[in-house]
View 1: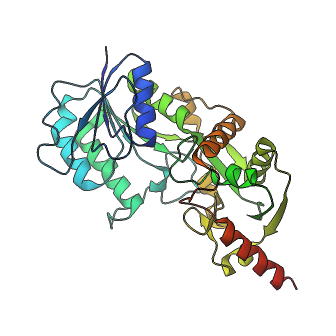
View 2 (view 1 turned 30 degrees about the vertical axis):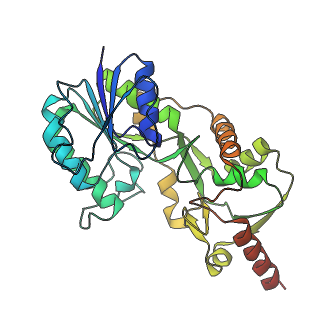
Length: 322
């Protein structure tokens, strides 16, 4: 029986990875503070604060697989010191955000040079380099793009099916030259477990199929049975109203600036060659809609426009149009 340690395992992706390993018959231990949620049935939780000296005292023996989901230096380094010599294989979950040049669309692209470890890309690169120095040839660096599916705490992908399910007039950006590339959280977790069990190493961009932005919104409309209307606005109109790109409050999620379009067009050939598989985007959209309905279509979200913000933006656009 494989011994698997998930450094995390109570939050979204970590819990999915733990669940996948449990399904494979592994002995799964999740080390976490236990504040982000519950571990899956069949796993064991070791509660610890990784910034304390005693964080790893309960972890004995060797591990067939260690999965690291963190990137902050004060938690990455102690884990490596305590566990690197006891791990047969180590998976570091990084991000495509590390790339400095997205016009090079595969893993050969250069990464940013870390200068400020409070910045997400810089900290991710620093974590990759520290882990590579400690693990050498036993390391897989998985670089996911946008992750989607049930339970997504970022609300980026789920904003659109949730919004369309409520009907009415929906504000959206122009889609020309924009793309969306997502990987279902269950597909990512399944691949990470597969890669750990088969010893995949190196750097792999774990990303989905490239889709046109317009096609993704059309799919969301079809899945939700949307019978409302669209108000399509240009980049300048949206920016003038303080509406942001991609994610976060007062944004239109998944919408990237034109010069950032290559970020959603990564090559997934290495992922597929390493055993990765992708379900149809429609299935991910259906799963996401079901989850959004279950969590509440009118709940507060970390990304997108509230109905009041959208109504104000639509009114402003109406007035500006004369």
